[in-house]
Length: 346
Ligand SMILES: [Zn+2]
Image 1: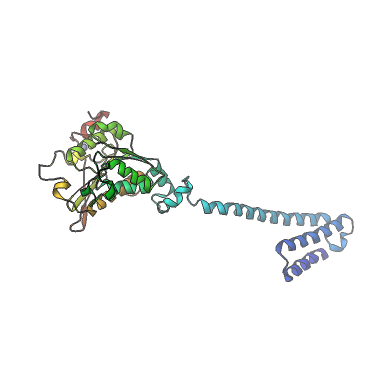
Image 2: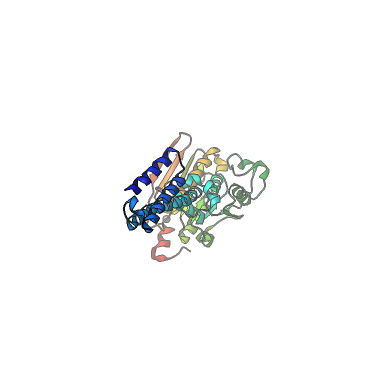
């Protein structure tokens, strides 16, 4: 029994004099070793117990201490790793800060940001709608973006096409837009296509996961719709005039209508004049183009409810927006024949 009290006295004395933890442990170990050695040499009777008893007790205490030390070591190794990689997905360090506000969104997070990085998106038209579409998709980290436009920057564009600057007048829009996107986010790959995208471009479109159309001629939009239907690539289309705009997702391959389901014939001459004739308020393409970019990010990450089978109409003059349902027409001349029987469009 004396051995037990010896250890208690050592522990209390060490605690009273404020001995550091490791020195206290060393003193207790020394006292225990003296008791054990005394038993082994046949002189341990005075301490009580037996050599085996003290050995087992010391071994058990040693095991507990070793287990706790092991836990502390593991924690010390895990803590700095957690601090440097808060996102579980394999997003590179340079991207963690840039996309931090996406990474904390439950609907996007690491997996959604990885999907954005791995997709190819085609933006047709680097005008009023294309400007916010290009800037927001580039900023959001959409990995590969092709921007197509055959026009050049003119003075009258600058009232709303905020991706361009005054000193870029005369530059090819696709190239000037690509330059702005690369400057905004050097981590993405941008391709400038200084030409019109037409019905004959189904192959080009098939190389992309999503198309955003911000062009303003009905004939041109019909051609792009036909090519997207043929390539079975979803199309986010926006259009604007004066104070009003609309945005929707055409995706007949996965349900929902195509452009021709809703607008089978061109509007009567004079009924839907282009912006150059009818005018457009500067921030309107900013609103509608930003909605297109938002719908693109939702579509690409699977977040929320997209605009397949719905069209959002925004009235800037009265500050109102409304949603209308859209349906696919079985007898649609574009998606009706193209999707049935697996045939492709002409
Ligand atoms: Zn259709």
